[in-house]
Image (cartoon, rainbow, N blue to C red; front, side, top):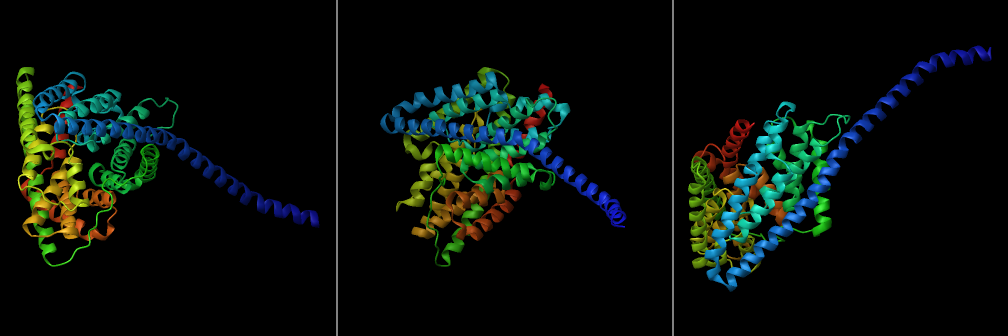
Length: 456
């Protein structure tokens, strides 16, 4: 009787146990598959953080060298700028045409065409050669006093690292979405460049993604975390702009925030449109001699501004941001924002490598400082307008309001100003749209798509 009872229990339990075993094996198989697919992201993220740190070191050293040369030998700028601009242009023209400019439109174009049939086209936009030329060309441009930044180039460099890892995966490896890996690369590049992980994630969602975030959220988060940790391990934990005091008082501050947001949105959109026109004009000049003339003309405009106006008319502008935010000297001459806008057009448009993120922040900071002076706002009130200007001008030229606000919040660690920065980003975005419907990035992306498809 007992034996029959045991036999009955075994017959009843066996299907249940088999089902549990199947589910267990299936769960282990899925976990193993996900782990296996994550390995390329881990490897690419680690190298992305390493490259971001090395590029930061090269760029910052070159920028400091340029500033010292101008301070000690002001006359040398008339030799240094033309020679450096020419080398920057020639390197890109000769070896890697798609390494020019910021790099973000190239990444946008690569993501748009990323599919097996266009693998060769993506390699033209993102590769080891692109990394090398991007670093060297932008270093020469900043050595010559060019008003460019390293953040956009870091995004193209990071995406190139991810593309190389993807390209050399063995054929037996479980297929990985190329679009996912490129988006993750771009996000990790921005996160490592500014030490702003949330900014990198928001940038990927707002600017690069045209499909649901659920499709790549895990790989995106992992890439940002690993790249950021590697960059911090090598360079130390830091805030791009420290801890400015932004406590405000008085109704005049609200008026100042509104004025700065409108001005920054207007000028950001206009500068983007002018850069596009100059780039398009230079592209129409097929002969090398014609392009060289434009490059030399741009270098003369930049060197003349630096000679007469000093270091405020050169480089990424981080010194301007630090001086106005962290010292009692918040004075910026009314013409400095205009000079830096002109310098950005001349430096960015002439064909070499270099980004617009940091220069845009410094132009916005200058607009905020000038406005605070006109409204007789000082101290923490002036600081708030400076930070608002940074957010608003970056929004105006990139049309990425949430990315701009989050990046500035993270680089200053001033969450108390989040509503002011969000307000500035929204107002600037609306003004910019009324001035110019398409952003500079969108216009350049369309150009690169056309060029890369024609070249293929």
